[in-house]
Length: 203
Image (cartoon, rainbow, N blue to C red; front, side):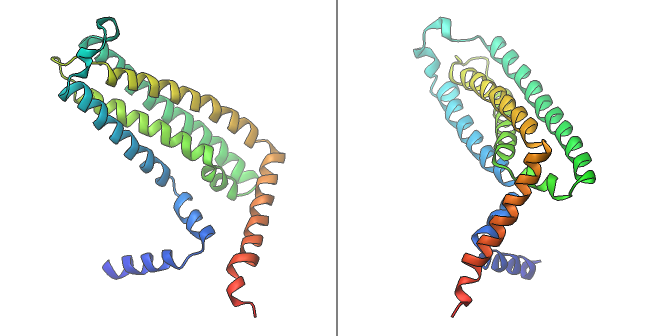
């Protein structure tokens, strides 16, 4: 196991920039992990402000939601974000699997590697992680402001990302755009190979 891991690490460092990018982003875990780390950091900051420092007392009372309201907000957002993530990507993957069978198996991989797809999935997972952690650590004795406000903002950002993602799907799934995307990818691979990867071997 240790030998195999060392070989994989050595193989990674010997890759070109293009190969490293494909290796990292051809799998769906890379971008969501980054967003999850950011989400966890945000959770620590807002929890520190609301639960430990009680900065909510410094905010006018009409801006401080009660414990029950905060719990209801977080519960609703947790279920909503999970459903949004599940149904969105289930529908997309079903459609793309059909297209892949009809045209090219690379369609699914190319779509999942696009920045909008990666960032949308990261936003959904990061937002869900934040509201779930916030819900788990609720305290009846605290005055809340930063946690419910951040959760609401993340929900708005997720809705915005959803709208942008749907538009991205509609545009990307057009036959002309799919073929153009595969053409551009092939050109970039050839250019990168000829200019960068083979350059050290030229006399």
